[in-house]
Image 1 (cartoon, rainbow, N blue to C red):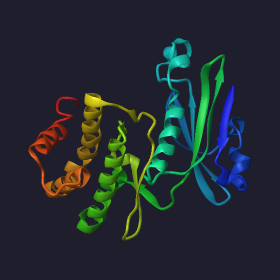
Image 2: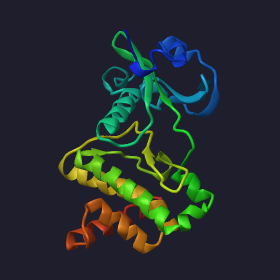
Image 3: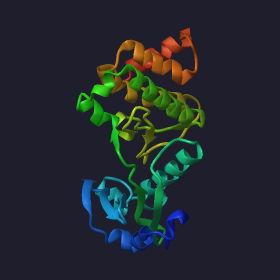
Length: 255
């Protein structure tokens, strides 16, 4: 059984001929961006635009479990999780990459392969690269403030929906060039919904992942300003202090 969907806004474009079905997507060649035993990402140019093609096989990184374990039949394919999360981000008003096409193939009920295609967001760099390059924008308090407010809003939107990203790192946040930056959230194959204490734990983890790099690049006042924007308060409460302690100490002894 095959399920494949092409975004209607691309139906009349050159992209429709290239990404119109799963067989064509899996036969594509392009610039290799990254790969592992589970996933291969290519960048492909079509009609003057560039697209990222993310192709999954199996349903887990352990080879035995992928092909002989129950996860092949009962587990949620990561590709489906990823495209559903991107669609959710769009519905919540979070800037993200536009889905061009997506779908998967099953055989006898078991997952075989799947893919999603997104259009490249032009003139953007992920925040991790900006940090690694010691980009002078990180010393521009106005620019940092604009970016920080947007990241806080993105995190708050996710968490208010009961959703945790589970890999909310600087590398998954793109920012475009120019004096008025826009932040985009990308790549979320492991994010999902939680409740109660588990959601609280995942929220701490998301915020700790952001702070892991922030503590090396930003001042304490900038980090505190981010947290206050996130909770939409002018001052921290006793409860906030306890949470901040958990965020700052989250990775202690874990690495």
